[in-house]
Length: 197
Image 1 (spheres, one colour):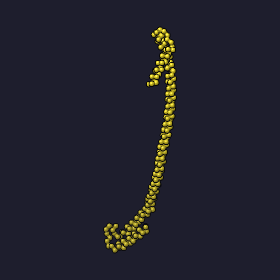
Image 2: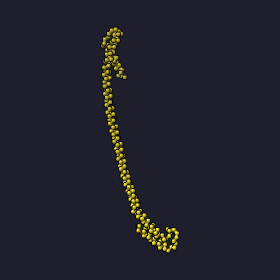
Image 3: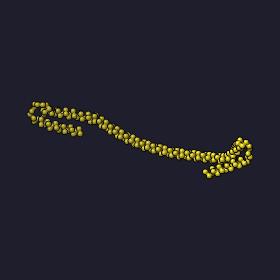
């Protein structure tokens, strides 16, 4: 490429040189004077050639190296971001699985505890009901026993009380058998009345 540029400039110089010999004007601006064109073109080619060499050998490789390093860094960053995204998605899935598993375990423990508590309540209520039934039976037995024994005791107390009252009223003692017959007759009537009610 550099050879092509130099060759094109040389052709231009010779063309200008050949036209400049035929020109008759020698005054005016030196840039427009064909006499100085050859030296101007030479220095132009020389300075731009050195600039081109400096650019192509020193500056452009650094720029391209920087561009390549930036490109590789960007690709690295993109790959790293993609890996991090995949890792975060996996962690998110694991987190959701752990939450789901924890919820299921909590429900399972809750149901087991609920069943255990209900069973305990049922056992306690059955025990309490059995105790209450036993107490009721024992109380009923006691009442029945009192009922049976109390009539005899009441009759005995009634006989003794009647005897002492009659003795105080009349001043004489009456036979125990006649008083006990009257008291027993009254107690039988009272029992019959209670049974009817």
